[in-house]
Length: 214
Ligand SMILES: C[S@@+](CC[C@H](N)C(=O)[O-])C[C@H]1O[C@@H](n2cnc3c(N)ncnc32)[C@H](O)[C@@H]1O
Image 1 (tube, helix red, strand yellow):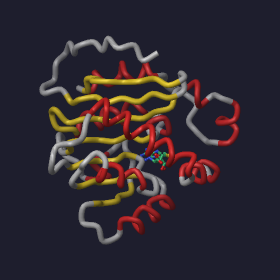
Image 2: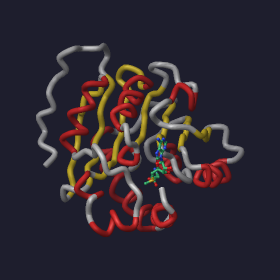
Image 3: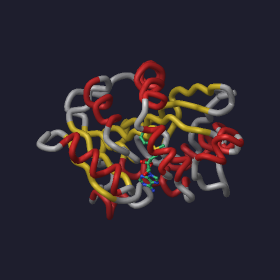
């Protein structure tokens, strides 16, 4: 993430939509977490999303992971001394190394606009499927290839350009990792949001998702 994007992410331009639009929508699509839930936020940045995961989604504990040392330093300052929160450095494509995450070890995973930053985004979704317990939920809020290609975004921000996804690609990839979509919504073809549930057992023919995200 370059300096311009860090400034935008820390500003009300990002915080406002996350608090007033994404969170209510994701709660409507996937509901609050069960009491005692242990959640993981991939790409936690400066740790603002963790507040929402604790207070609005109802997690008991949250682990936040990110690759960016500057953002992590701010997240650590924000959550210093809070025993319900752990902040770690590492990649969401290798959660075993980063947070020592065993299979089926989380009740929920949150992606607030991070997977589009990852070149091998399928590897990241595979990790999400691996670390979620059966019945656990993946809450996601993402940007499409179309949004990333818009001239202003392409000029100001620094995103991978190869092998990007739209909502259909992303939603089609989830069942390959044991994640069945229970609700999704697309916005203007540039953004999409949704919740997927970890299948109870590995089923080679997962149910098809018949809600059209477009
Ligand atoms: C657009 S910011 C979103 C930050 C925060 N989730 C929010 O909504 O404000 C994307 C974040 O993903 C992080 N990131 C990029 N690649 C990552 C990876 N492979 N593993 C973990 N975090 C990553 C970046 O450092 C950045 O903090």
